[in-house]
Length: 477
Image (cartoon, rainbow, N blue to C red; front, side, top):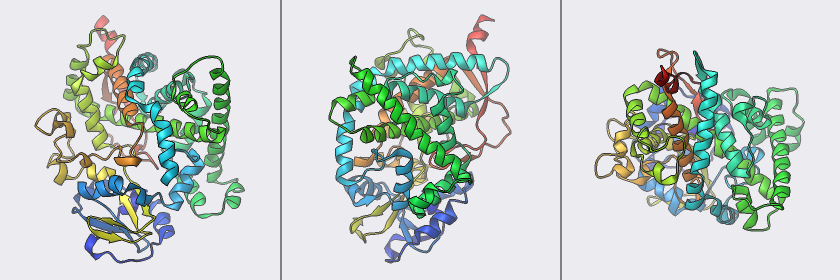
């Protein structure tokens, strides 16, 4: 819950053991989405500060790599998701990897890890790129002379990819506007925050019995979508189990099923997690990538020139992908500037420490990925500039010029880091490669302000409309 940190600050050393008014804080903060300027203002806080919640209680905000390392890595299991956050995520994702805590999380991560091994991801490169090539053909038909709203289109292609890689099924969402899963996720993760905010508040603070009977409200549409989504995923799982009896398969859920004897509920929860985390975040990242490349035509040209040096643009393998340094730098820079999930909240479940400061059980902690990724003290005075070159030049190029790996928090670190981060990075690069080779991007209205919105992931408030200039047609002419 990233908005909770917007308030006045108090030094870490001045911490008092006060009761946190979590309900008041959440209720007030979730009905105010910060503007772009307010988000950037977070980057001006001093390292080592802590912010006070709206309800009066303190909340720790680590803003140095050392403090971040202690919380997300060294003492990761001292911190759990707060109850309201966990309840909301559980309603949407089930009891999957994102929601699990403690020993349950350790066991679950161990079971899921084989599906995200280096070899598994490398073997997916041809599939990612094939999907990207099919995607650009669809886009070419959609925008022969006009503009295309890219946020929705990106969500479709990444959902197709997670369908193929996650459960071995071709949803063909890019060609099918009536795809059930795509419609459900649009309701749950779309830019209209009102219904999902209400869904959060109701699920966080009211008894389940009351929640289940609250129909005829703005809540009902999201609640019905969440319920239907689980029903649809269970149906897909049953299809999968039947097909596995007939042939060997290597998608994510098949790999997990072969690694142990898991219940249908367990597998359904993992699928819900993969579908949600595996398509919306990458779609958001690609949307912001095209936005930045549209603003910086010269960098778009540099990227295209590098990608055009590929031997055969119709196919791709992992080795070829690894030899595109500017492509990698562009993706790193976008992920730094626009982390799909800009912050997360934790609550200490035991007495713990941060930088020698004792924090009592019950202390809240806000981990500001957006803020850390844009701190001038870590990245320099050009921290807010889109400069892929920072990932190519200088002795610290592998870290984007930062002094510490913990200056880049998009995927977090430690036991709670994103298990699918390499999957997301490779998918992002493959899709961007296909897009940059086919189109030149331009904002439909260069003067229009692109505002951010969203609940869990941050996306353009009114979508992102781009003019797509088809390079294949320009070459023919």
